[in-house]
Image (cartoon, rainbow, N blue to C red; front, side):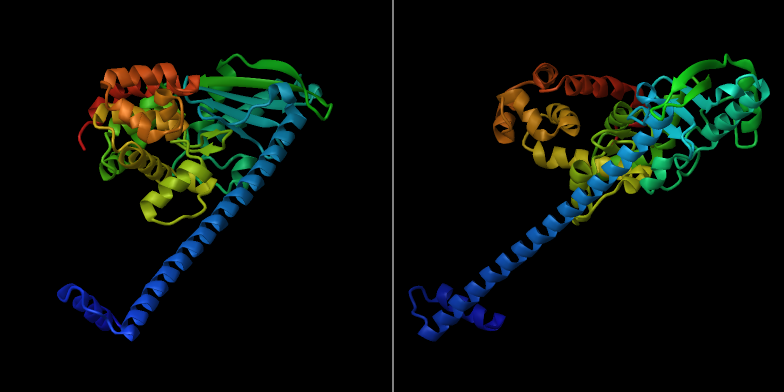
Length: 403
């Protein structure tokens, strides 16, 4: 049926109440309605099939990454043993050499860098050679853009725009360490620091010696890293109608501005996004497209900040949109970012019923909502998380507030 015919039929019904349509017209109208219904149903089935295929892609990707990570862990334990296993976390970046006999650990929370090298016990007497190997690993740590680790290749990670430690290390003269001065700094550290030596037995049964040295980052290293991401944070906060201080505080709590953060979920990057849940929802919210969001995509700071801000916006404008008090809504979004909106509801009504929880929240002051979250959220991690984010927000008063 043409749109003209349909409009004619509808006009006849509206202008002449009770008028009888010819049987052929009624049949045609009913056929049109059936066709429309079938079209909607067909679109729904196609979309469900598409969603299912994307979900299957996520499952295959996660399984592949888990397999690769298990192999990676096995390589580490083979040389270092299970007790000395170290891998990257939300707040630590741990990178290994290709043969897994060298590693560097950056503690982004406390501003400490440790480099370690495994050597054959027979090499222990050659002090100059050991010092040279430590120096090489210190230089690698200073120049690393997040790709100097075997797992980075498996995750197909792209190099960061600048070294992870750029602007966060100073030499004896107080000047920032650059690529040109990295070797001299490494020599100073290897000569001037206390080199530790410890026996190590890997799962391969080989006895080795671990030699290590370390250095500290500048006192304001956290703020310096935050400054690196200031432009995208402020831009995305304005785009998604967020207080920039909230995004900065959440990012600090999630990763201490470690762009290579990785947690067991697995969650990736600055704002610790899980590909199959938060990242997927955020990408759909921003681009109206359901797609596989991979680790290499989330390690890119610009992408991570965008989707992290979008996820916060999604919670504020969808999950908790009916909370009338803005402060209470923000408190719930902070908790939801860490544990999911349904678990936030459990803190108020004992079950995963968001509408019922919102009814209760709207009868409370923002102070009472905060206290309820701190006391009743299902997990201690999230209870502390809410406090950490709220307490950190004033640190970024100079960079935020306006939207």
